[in-house]
Every structure is written in structure tokens, then in C-alpha cells.
Amino acid sequence: MSPLMKRPNALVTRHLSLGYEGKPVITHLDLGIPAERITALVGPNGCGKSTLLRGLGRLLKPTAGTVYLDGAAIAQLSTGAIAKLLGILPQSPVAPEGLTVRDLVAMGRYPYQRWWQQWSNQDERMTQGALLMTRLQKLAERPVDTLSGGQRQRAWIAMILAQDTQILLLDEPTTFLDLAHQVEVLELLWELNRDQGRTVVMVLHDLNQACRYADHIVMLREGVVFAQGEPTEVMTEEIVQQVFDLECRIVADPVAGTPMCIPLSFHARRVRTE
Amino acid sequence: MKSWQYLQFWQLPLSWRKPHGRLSQVMLFLTLLTLVVTIAALTYGDYPVSWLDVVKSLLMLPTVDPESPWVVHTLRLPRVLLGWLVGIALGVSGTILQGLTRNSLADPGIVGVNAGAGLAAVSLIILFPNAQLALPLAAFGGGLGVAVLLYLLAGTQGNSPLRLILTGVALSAITSAFTTLLLTFGRINQVTQALVWLVGSVSGKSWEHVWPLLPWIVVLIPLAMLRSRSLNALQLGSDVARGLGSRVERERSGLLLMSVALASAAVATAGTIGFVGLISPHVGRRLVSSDHESLIPVAALIGGLLVICSDLIGRSVFSPTEIPCGIMTAVLGAPYFLFLLHWSQKK
Image (tube, rainbow over all chains, first blue to last red):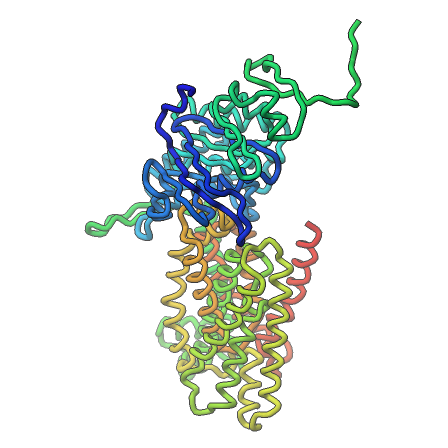
């Protein structure tokens, strides 16, 4: 057992079953998400990783079982109370036309507002802080729909940062971004975890990025946790073969030293250097 | 620079976010424009009254022509005021509906809420001619019925703007067909009464028509403004809204009720005046932003302005023949709708 598993869990599932309209996606899942660490949910398309994330973030009601947030059953908590503990960013959200970055980020303060106190000093501070952390101060008055993909994603992350939650859940935060912007977003999440001790759970497609940035990897296959643990434990040629049906070699990432998966190919041209 | 405001009333601290930077200028401009158009509307008419007399009568000062105050206060002011209130109701109703459905083509007229309210009201006029007092309630019931059907048939996810519009148009057509059926079988007096009402007009309205509408506006507009942040959250999509802690279903039904109530109150008072709910939030978004804290008051003023202008134009261009303002808003609004539809298809 890795030392990681001894940490307290931020989120725990017990016999959790999730599905859409009678179609079960995940059945009887027991899982712990370590606190103050970055966890990546990976797996082939349709394995239920997004469904699991939606279940963890109470966007999807379980058909059976329970999700515990800091030891309390999530179904017993009010949705407003959860919003102060856990922020969730769904996959590729769409901002309404003309909404400025500042207005979007300010929406992160929604769970703290009452009708008689719609804005406070703290709200203002957190909004400014979120803009600063995501380096968006200069773009604050720009409409979100006029930004580039990477900036837009940063604006959405700034919104859940303004929400000021210990736990951040993100569904494929790097989709539709070019490589530079992917790295930018992942670096930001890494800083948030290392500097502020936030628990980050994200669905990722790219295994090598998952290995580089996550402390804990959960590999799903057909709604079942196939393997979980530190990247070095989970990323083996056998496991990748079984989960993704892909033959590969695992080498050390030349930059980060983390495992890196190189798919085998029968067609790619081998470049010989004389 | 502080971008929020704080007030202390006894122990209750009131604070709110200072909305979009241009809001105060835009509001001031729209208010002044409304005042100018109101004075123009009060000046124009069969009996000649100078604009100076209009202003004097409004301020209760002695006028040059002793008849002026009576003409202004009894004949013209209720009509203008009623048009203004109807415009406000329709503008805010459309703004809420567009935010709720995340669809900038939604409008209580286009999706059939007005037609539903119209059918219920015409049924009441023709079948129960003695129950005129229940007109607003009947209209509200009819509008709500269509809104609920629309909600069930097209959903509110806004992933397909055209689906919502087409379902609404179909519902609108069915409802209008029933209205026509009623008009065919009704007694001639009541049919005439219903027809005049259906076209959507503020002509011949007096203070007794203004009072029943006022409480709806006074209650629902501030309520809508208090819920504007909720509407902002819903506008980001139901998953994001839920993640932010919004009780999505509850908020959505509450806001839908508000929108339908406002549109129905307007229809019950002045008949079906279309397109105001479509245009107001659109122009509003250009002037401020899609943040509903700024958008709702701006769209309200634009809606009011639109109806007063339409009525004034309808009254003056083919004088002495009056064109009902419902027709004027359609003449102005339909091309705008087509333009938007074309533009949204291109995107």
C-alpha cells in the first residue's frame, strides 16, 4: 500500500451506482479520493469517468449507494452547503454571449449570496484573487466569447476558484485546447494544489499528462475501477494493455521522470539515425 | 476602486454588486428618452395641447389653456402609462424567458404564451361575458398552460434553439386555431369585443385599466430583479448552475412563472402585443451585457419605450385612422426576428 492511501479521503463512495435513464454506467463502486492531492480519472471512451465525476459532484443522483464529502453523506447536505465545499466544472461549458470575464468569475460567489447581501468585501476579494491567480486581470472586461480557448478555460476555472472550495472537480479541462494551452491549464491546477493544498479531481484523456500532474490515478474500465494508485504503480504495460486494449511501452518522461506511455505501431516508419 | 455598494439599515446590512460600468449612463439616457417620448405622446392628439402645457399639467401648474390638464390627465396619460407598463412587463418577461431557455430567440409571443393567454381570455369574453374581472387570471392560466406544454415538449436545455422556437410556433398555431374557432361560433357582440381586444391595443384605455395591471408590475419586477443572479447562474447551463448551489428546478419554475405572469398580465390588459419581449433584451444586451442585474432594468425601460413609440407612430402616420400598437410592434419586430434568425443560423 502506498503512503498516499493513508491520507484522509476528501470524497468517498460506498456501493455507488450511477446511470442514465435505467442504463447503469457504474455499479457498486467503492472509491476514495485522497485529500489535498491531484487525482486523475482515466480510461477509454465510455468507461464512465465523466459519469463518476458528475456523481461525485452531486450533478447526477446515484441510483444506489452514497457519496461522502468529508465524512458526511452528500445527499444529506443542502446543495448550497456543498457549493461552499466543492466546485465542479462540467465539460466544455458555454458562456452566454457578451458576458464579461469579471461577471463570469463573480458568479463563483453565488453560493455565498443572500438577497439582502448580494455582494461583500469578501466576494470582491475572492473575485480579484481568482482573476489574479489565473492571470486574467487584463482581460477582465472582455466578453468571454471573444477569448481564445485557453483563456476561456482559465476564465471558467477562475469562476470555480472564486467559489473558494477545498475540492475542485474538473471534467476534461484540457479538451479542445492546443498543447500549449493544455499545459498552461494543468500547470495552474498543479499550482493550486501545491500552493493552496486544494484537492483536485479531473477527468483526463491524455495518459502522459495524467502521470505528470496527478498524484493518484484511477483507471476505469466499463464502470469498474481496474487499477488505482500512484502513476508508477498504475502505468504498466500490462494494465494499459488490459484497460485500453493497446500495446505500448512505458518509458520515463524525459522532463518530469514520470511514466510515459508510447503506443506500439506496426505502420509507423522507424527513423534510423546512422 | 470599490465595485460594490453597502448600506446599513438598522441591523440589516444591504449590499450589492455595482453592475456594469455603463449601466447608470444607459439608464439615464433611456429614462430621458422615455420622458421626451411621453411628452410627445401626450402632446399629440385631436385636441391641440402645447408641449409646455403638457409639462405644466404633469407638474400640476396652471396652464395657458384651462382644458389642457383634463385632456392630459384623463384622456392621454392613462393610455401612455398603460402602454409603458405593458412594455415593461413584456420586456422583462422576454428577458427572463431568454435567460431561462439560453435562447436569444425566445419571446412570450413567439413561443405561444401570448396566444395561450389570448385563448383563455377570448374564451372568457365569449363563453362567460359576465366574468370580465377574472380576465387577468384566465389569461395567466392560459399562458401558463402553454408554457408548461412547451417546457415538456421542447425542454429548456437550449441545446437546440430552433426546436424550442418551432415547438412554440406550433403551440401558438394550435392555440390561435382554437381562438378562431371560438370567434366563429361566438355571439357577434362578444366576438367584436374579443377581436378588438385580441389585436393588441392601448387605445381608449383609462385609469380603470391601469390600476389592475399596476400591482403585477410593482410586485413582479422587483422580484425578478432579486432573482437576477439566479437567472445568471441558470444562464450558464444547468450543470454549472447546480455546481454553484442553485436549486435548478425550483429556480427555473419560479422564474418561468414570473415570466408567464408578466406576459399574461400584459396580454390581459392590452391584448397580444408581440415582439417587445424579443427586441428589448436584445437591444439591452448590446447596451449593457448579458448580466441580468443590469439587463433586467434596461430591458424594462426599452420595452416601455417601444410600446409608447409604437402607439404614437400607429396613432400619427395614418391619422385620423389609428393603427393598433400590436400591429406596429409586429411591423417593427418581425423583420428584426427574421434578421436574428438568419444571423443565428449563420453562426
